Amino acid sequence: MTAIAATVQAFFTERLIAQRRASPHTITAYRDTLRLLLGFAARRTGTSPCCLDVADLDAPVISAFLDHLERERGNTIRSRNARLAAIHSLFGFAALRHPEHSADIARVLAIPPKRADQTIVTFLTATETEALLAAPDRTARTGRRDHAWILLAVQTGLRASELTALTRRDVHLGAGAYVACHGKGRKDRITPLAPGTVTTLRAWLAENAGTPGGPLFTTIRGGPMSRDALQQRLDLHAAAAGKSCPSLASKNVTPHVLRHSAAMALLHAGVDITVIALWLGCAARRSVVPPAQRAEMRGEISGSDG
Image (tube, rainbow, N blue to C red; front, side, top):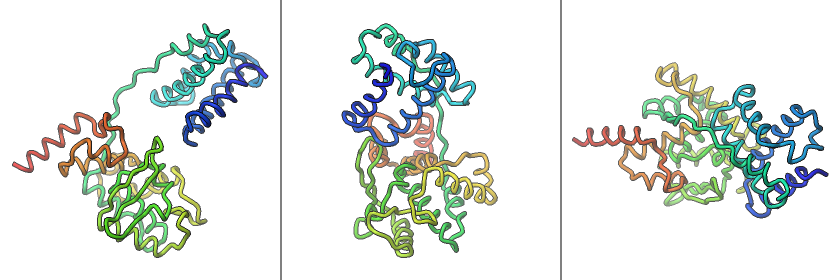
């Protein structure tokens, strides 16, 4: 077994799983990055992946791999930087285990992330949100399910991963109704539910029997919906809603857009930014709304009050 093979194995079992207790999503992302890297390096060097060593993954190879991600695989700069972060994490771990390769490792760790243009995530207006919520055919089970999870997403700002992970026991519909979720960074939070959302979820739960630990939003086969399924259904309903609300046709509606719409609705209602961050499970130091949009919304608020 080569040094890099043993290091990769220890990186996952010791560093990610045992020490950092990384989430399954993080482990999957790191696994995919290293799978792509080793495959690229094997083709470039003509060496079998199982025979690659640290010297075969030097800075020129890593840089060429990053260029390959952008030019040939069509990755965005953000995705490219995420792959680089995974590589940096592996090589930082390798530096402690293989000081004999310190020069090669240091050069890889010195590869900087690429600066990307700041992307302003769009959001839905109240009219667009109403059109989207009206799009699912509620005479069908899938339509009632989609209406329920879209309404929950728009009201609470839950992430796609949080929506798909919800179980029936996470929803509490009595006095002081709320939904509990285990979010990003293993942070647990409780988000209150509006009366309309409570009514919709109560009807959905009554219609679909299940165990407390069962998924809240299920497929036809009874399993949890995937993030890809959320996006597929959202594309379908956004296209339908666009017929009655033309402004939706110019927007790429994603679960994150629903999350951002929840933040903007709270901001428009005069809720403080730090409270919105807590509501959405974001770090308090990081704004959930871009500065330009914050200023715009503050202008709308003050204008409406005047």
